[in-house]
Image 1: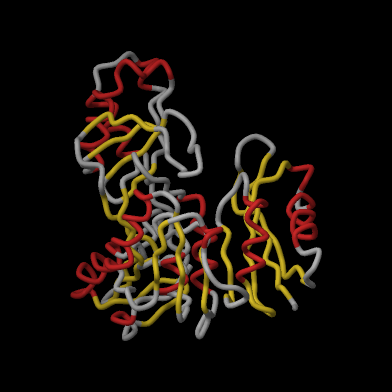
Image 2: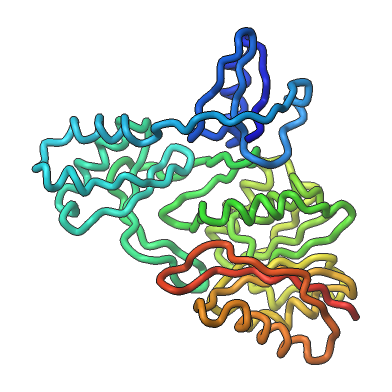
Length: 338
């Protein structure tokens, strides 16, 4: 794992800055090497202000991330041992808002439990997931257990995402795919993100992959508002053009060097529009969900049917994450040749 090597007297200042940008691997220990401190980093481009520091390969030991917090949380709660034993040991921390699921047995104690987590983890709000993301606007099903203000700013890989997890989705399970988009070389490219959301892929493509222009389309007005906030927050006003509305209404033909279809469920219905937008030689990143017995045939069949009048080649495909029992979220990259 790569670590940034920092003089001891600068270590805390550098760590805090990197941590605010979501670059520090919190699950690994920081290493002490006499006059130097080695801070483990996530993959991705290191911000330019840290370029003077050396990057080295080390193997920092895992931290006991949850053990101490859980011990403290259990100590705060006056519950039977049988209930303490089923407290959630996994949660998602978006900025300073916690999101977790609660077993049915703990539902009556939800606000009390949430307050304990908030105090131990220094969170301003705690949100319970009570269902799945649904609808065209991808709205999450949640219940606020603690706090009042759920708008937060979440740093990830040097990019800042402003959001309200009670109103818009944010899938941490897509982290590796966001990192893959960030690692592309999009210099000189015009990119269309057909399902931009709050900027999950738009921001890495603009800030890290250095796209010339990203046209980011989003149909949900709430997500679009956060997308506009995030464009400003990351200083990308000159690169990203947010568009509110149905992507099938986007004007223009065969101008995009790259089209991103980061949506699942009905993505196949939007392939004709993607093919209208992409230029000859351009790339389409096509996402969808398939059962394990359909991998990757379901997506390849959809592409073949949509490309009946255009030549194409599949560049590659991979699974992004599990999407429930026996189902996978996949992405296929294909190049349109004519």
